[in-house]
Amino acid sequence: MIGIYSHGRSYMHLLDPRTKLALMVGMGLLIYSAQLPALTVLLALVLLLSRASGLPYTRLVQGLRPVLVFFSVIFLAHLLFTPGKPLIEGLVVPTVEGVTTGSVLVLRFILLILYTSIMTYSTSPSGLNYALTFFLRPFGTFGTDLAFMTGTAMTLIPGLFREKDTITKAQAARGYKPRGMKGFTALVVPLMNRSLKRVDELSDALESRCFHSKRRYYYYRQTLANRDYVAVGIYVVLAGVVLFVRFEARF
Image 1: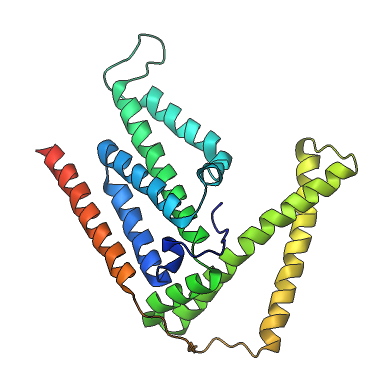
Image 2: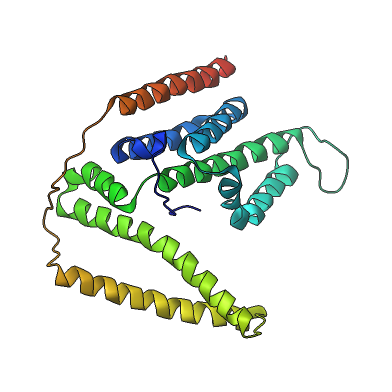
């Protein structure tokens, strides 16, 4: 789900890409510093943002399926090996502290993935490239090239998923049943072949347009609107509440 953009006119789509990128970094820091009560509030906020961006909840949750096994392993590791008050007696003892620690860590990962999915769903690759170039401008040519490479990589991610679906459907139509390492190789080899072909086409397109690594300028310069200031204000209030709850719990 991350990296797949869908055109729209929702509130999230109309936000300046620089605002969304700055808020994405800020939300990452906020999620990292929040504990379980604040994380539930942030989860509710992410669901509201999904509604505001027009992203269906079903598609939002589908982005978590590839990492469910990873989350399960993390939670079980904390559940069984975190010292504390035991829930039951046995050889390997799950603890109350393990439940809390595992839940917090998994919920943080989930929130990061969901929020990033919403941002990339509502931000075009060109908008993301513009925002990255704006914030990396102090680094000169290196920052501009890094922004371009990141934006290009985000553009190619949806193409890889489409190519993978095309290959698997073509193999299924021919009666091929992938099994073990042989099936993995049968998928990876044509996928790599098509990916390298797309990279070659991209390099030809850049060369034909006389693309260079010098400083680039934009014909249309975006300006922040009132909705951007409202979004930043909401984030500041939310950050204040989360930090207050965090430090209040310590005392």
